[in-house]
Length: 75
Image (cartoon, rainbow, N blue to C red; front, side):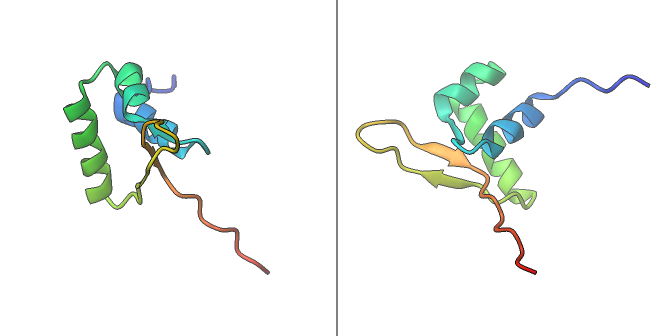
């Protein structure tokens, strides 16, 4: 059975999981959504229990959003 196509919300989730995270502009470009729609999608993901962090950009760079990586368990 063929794999179902990736949805836009899946695209957002995968971009947030990258180590560098994603800026609002990058999320808008990848999804074709306007900024307010991307922010609404981030809020929806938070309501569904996804821990999303916003980090301020340094030296005039835009803020980025991230899904924090869980620290690896020590045995």
